[in-house]
Length: 190
Image (tube, rainbow, N blue to C red):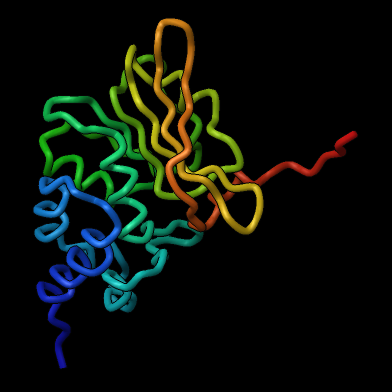
């Protein structure tokens, strides 16, 4: 029996996204159209619309639909902006659908980003702390959406660049897997 991915996409938006205070109808429309299942290996396509972080490559995951939608909405996206999607193939597809110019970074070195170039940076994996390289990749007034996680539950946050430096605002709790190389470093506290 073939899966009905179109129905699953619609159900994902109606039950996992709209019910979580994601009110940007542009996001609803994009998420109803983008075939999330094509971003997963064929044997995992059935997981595309489940309320899970679905592994698309070893140690890399598509973030839960609710969480990626909430991060994207918090970025207050505008067509024509320059975006960087770090280990974020689904977010990249949504950003492109919304008219942003998107560069993807999903290789070995996720810290190798050009400085001062992007209006928007988003990552679908968790990190212990937003890397300086990602913050420095932001153009003036640029925004970074990331989940910082040092324990069982992380905090989704938005960083905004201003003349004086960076501001940070917590958004919601989230538990995406931590990207390899971005785990908390052991240390001592006094």
